[in-house]
Image (spheres, rainbow, N blue to C red):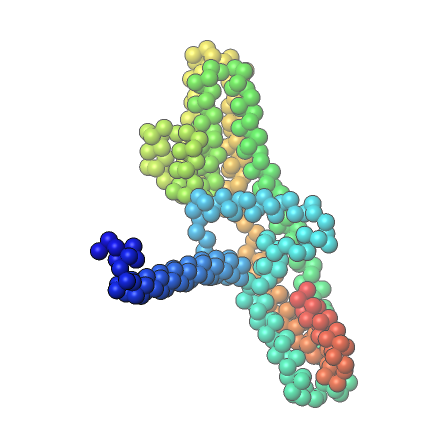
Length: 356
């Protein structure tokens, strides 16, 4: 048996070679199947990433606001903030995330306008608009359409100005929260014992986070505060249970109670002789300014831009854009008798006008 295994037996050498070849074929088939499975897994991962990217780009879906997703959104937001400093004819024009181009391709109404334009131009090539050749019908209501466009432009300018001012005021209030917390921290470092100062800052930072959680559905107690509390050690277990009983996701009750805890901490330090009356007044003033900044954000949320104004602008846009699209498509006229490059130039200018 041993001699046969090492090739010593002549009578069994042929059978041994056949067995080795069979094992070799089985091994090659196994490797081939493994490579095939690996390629399928790679293709599946690529397809999954591709579908996810398409959905994020062109489909308006409800976001999965997990902690990781919030961090990803924040990184994208930070990148967008710095893109305004890049060269105009470079990264600005080639940017997709956070631009009007992405909003345009996600809007169903823009899809309707493009289909309307393309369908109208196709009818031209099918000789369905022969009456347009008559000079009397060459332009359909261009003066009236221009009047509506001018009227809409005025309202859009005021709408954009109002929205921009609201954004600037909200940003100022948001950064004011951070500034007041830094002011209290600067005072606490030089006037309070470490234990009392850290407890005061814990309450203020927790109030800052709780304010945003009660303000928006994006940040919730589950996806933001719990992780922040674990990493920053903001509240103890008993204090956290108190916040859970109030329900941090609804309204500003939690941040207001945390503000009252901070003021109570200042009052306690004043009674114990750790700070004098003037310094306690400064603490209270800064803490109440923090409450005012958070309250300003809630005021903006409670009173958005007037619905009548938004509705009026939307109605004008809804009526004007289809008319404008038809006007551009009809006024371009017949181009099928032109040279290819001339026709391409006409159609490119026409569709760019509709897009703008």
